[in-house]
Image 1 (cartoon, rainbow, N blue to C red):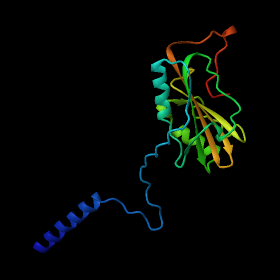
Image 2 (image 1 turned 180 degrees about the horizontal axis):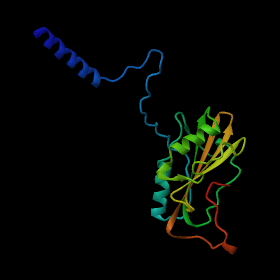
Image 3 (image 1 turned 90 degrees about the horizontal axis):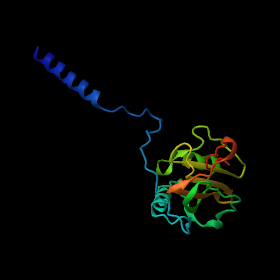
Image 4 (image 1 turned 45 degrees about the horizontal axis):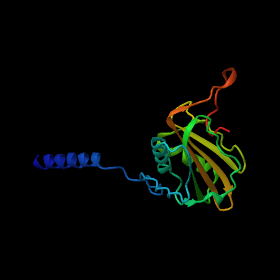
Length: 196
């Protein structure tokens, strides 16, 4: 009887320990991915500043720039990284503006755009929501991110295919506290930044 009780106690202890153990990965199955933090995006060299010298607007634009995250391997670049054929017009102002450039080597437009959607700077939201067109153009695309629906400030990224990968330009605009928007005729509304 004593042996049966000892056996039962050891069996219960073994079952209790088994219940606390984590499951093993079946042979040949990939190990679960560990959570990773994206590596910091290199600080851009040759940032171009323009617009209002309002300190609060400049600080907000700089905070958005500092929070930009691009894929691993990204390098800082200058405006000569690609030929950017258009610029964002910020209709409401005054605004403080910054412009910065990077190169994402061996990347595709879609992968770079997906990364930007998954790592928005400064809590900004995509103007496209979840319905961003996958490829708006064969050699480039424009993506806009704003602090709230209807805003006329934030970041507009222009992505261009170059021989080395994808060139990225960020056009950043932060409005001053007294910024206003010119009224449009016939009830027209401004389009979202970065929607073309």
